[in-house]
Image (cartoon, rainbow, N blue to C red; front, side, top):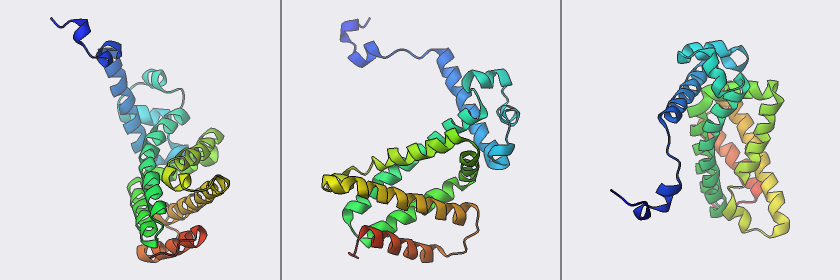
Length: 213
């Protein structure tokens, strides 16, 4: 028998997950997976709690044990999607630190791939943000949070310049999101990928004063 003294501190302090906890986690994930399918198919406004519980084969009472509303579920779902976006901001930090057009263009190309991967849920997100002030407020918080990932680039600037640079990049990313939304989700912009990459690279490098190849 292993003595408690021989166990690691993490083993002693970490609470053991019960079977009930594991079942709750599985059920919650089933609801999130079902919700994504429903939101992508119906949009945010038309989707109902009933649609989601039917897709998940879970009753409404169980739904409300996990989420107080459709909006709360959508926020949780989209938080998972946007957690992946933090990696792209870290890559942007690397590209900005490189101070070259090639690095900026490569980063922009990677964001195009991210938009292609998530286009089906990003349409409902725009719809949700337009109809729910709480979800819209979360969008601003997202930009603030991700801008904090630019540690190398912002850390190399003098203090008086840092906040201006941070705001400038946030505005560029907001503009990029709007362009990608109309191009990859709404399909109302008619542009070739390389053409748009060249144009955006020119815009970013002009604003950020990047002249190196």
